[in-house]
Length: 117
Image 1 (cartoon, rainbow, N blue to C red):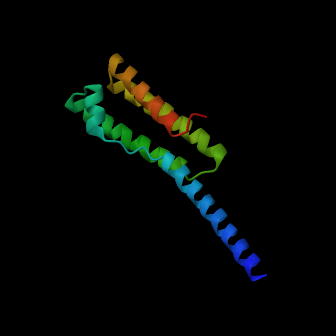
Image 2: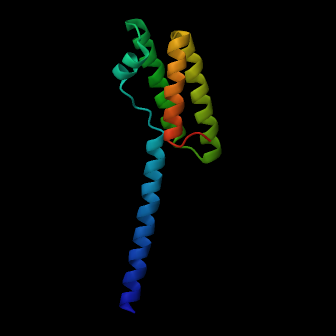
Image 3: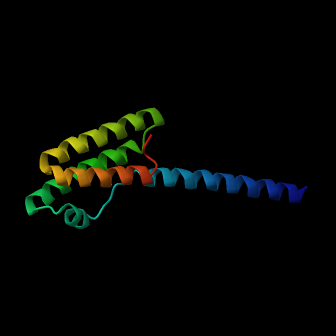
């Protein structure tokens, strides 16, 4: 009887631990922290562009962090809105070639994090 109780307790603990790990992994997927210097190098940004991109990305990152805290239906809409707003703002700062490369990087990031629903 004691062994059964210990086994059940162990299974419950393992299950709860797995749930917590999934929740943390889910929230981590929405963190959009990046190295702006590397992005600036990849996109060949000028100083003014770099500053603007950094500000735009900060807003995008904040919106994605907020989205992670909501339920699935609200979260999906918030993520879509954050991405669309980010792309619209970036298109005002980047030239066509830079924008093409930025969209490629953004799409890869969204896909790798499993946010492409």
